Length: 374
Image 1 (cartoon, rainbow, N blue to C red):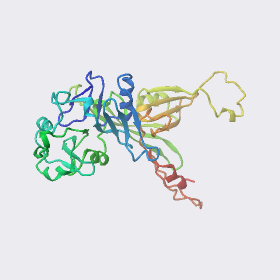
Image 2: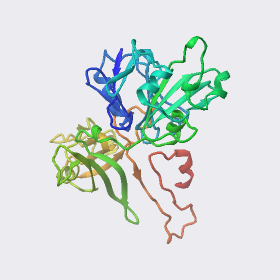
Image 3: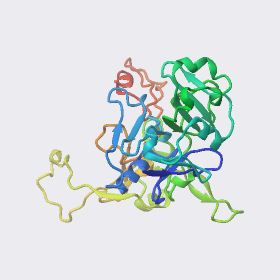
């Protein structure tokens, strides 16, 4: 049985395991959640990753942990955790302020929830699902209640009278960030509200990308302007109090390795191309190089960016921006690169063909823009 405890000041927003070796926090990136699971091979079993093949940008990404009774729900666009759903209460032990409210010894009844969390406003009854939803800040409890009790809940769950003195137990718990709108449920709240920003506890001294602007002149692309953030410290406070630090860097075609290292720091990995598949088209393909050279990449996984350097000049020759599209062969290797590319029409063009007027982004569909750039 998993032991899951509260780890925030005002609202539930994270899950911890008994050994405190890993924590799921709302706002954390999908890849970080997968890394936790990969580090616990043999402990976390039967993991399922669910996404839509036909509409992956509109349907939530889900990591289902059936042996733990937990479902992690991620926003499909920014790919950050927005809801932690506990759907099998028998598989977990829940505490609030150090006191259990769900365990083999303590059943999550109506009385127990009101005792642990205090009085609250009347909940919301879903007649279709026949569940009563009790909402707190960042937390919703779902009680299965027959529709015949619906007229009598005006004064809260505690006012309902059940046969033989038995009251329903919590069937599901949803953990999220923020307040619940009037008349809403945790699922509705999660589907309409974007996830919180990446929390500081998930920074791990890495560099992250807010957005990337593609720098262009009238006729050519010059490079990237990267709006970055990382973990910093306040100049007037102790180093023990980290804060978000924002910075902007530019990397341009022709920049050297040293320029990139100075701007972005060390890459997550350096990858050397094993072969040049385009060499066969070269007039000198039959000749052997006196010194074998290979172009190489700087891979920045948390930026969603690869930078290709020329083997001879060691200067930038290509940028690769990753969208981390579900189902792609390298899905989950990179964070999504939130790039912005504006290609305005050329006002001085006299040709009769179609003018380019598109602004592709990581979520742009090919069929939407293909006809505009022919």
